[in-house]
Length: 278
DNA sequence: AAACGCGCCTGCGGGC
DNA sequence: TGCCCGCAGGCGCGTT
Image (cartoon, rainbow, N blue to C red; front, side, top):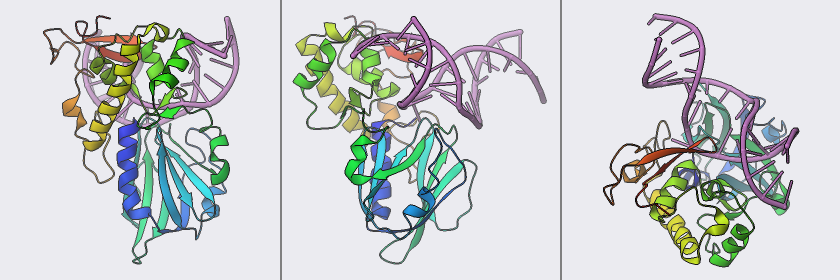
């Protein structure tokens, strides 16, 4: 479900509550989400303070005073919320992190994940980049270092389709299926084009539009297609701004073309065949 | 090394 | 009403 903008929205919201808060304990009600959950997670963060929260791609990274980092991934259906301590658990509430704020307020961070493709883990902060979920991640979609030379280098050795490359977290991390279609539309690039055939202008357009689309989506609180909500309970408002995703058979906003739905690698891909002829 | 499919899960909507 | 199928915002792993 959540792609970079939804994860960033969630991160910014929980940060308001969690920064400088003390973790009391972590409860988990399942043995595994996508993978087995390390049982030590229940104890290792007890009485530690949350110093900093980062996001890398679709991962939320919570750094604590015991020099560990809590790693959260929301998978397809994960949803974070903040609730009063001891409020009633609902279906698919799998992880509850109880904490106390500097003002004495006791709250809980809740991970609800219907499909259980999400994950929670922890690792020593110092060697976080060696963690198996983090070590292969490419550059973040909103990183200032996302530049032409870097991407040109990665693209020139590949024959895969640009749509697949957009979803490859080892190249650029954070982009998922919705924003891949949107960014390619903004860039007027046909998703079936091979990455090693992209011109300099096309790559530069792509990089610019990655920034534009992702940051616009963040400003709008992300995209709600079905059930995604911001942690404050509001839906994301970027859906109204989507140009192609989910708009098959409808008219393109920029020309008279009709939006087409393709299947690329079993993933729905939306294009305007006129704007994205090449 | 790169490029595919598979499988992990639940739930929903459409067709019969 | 119910069953079956396909599909859904992700991604590591095994196989080619």
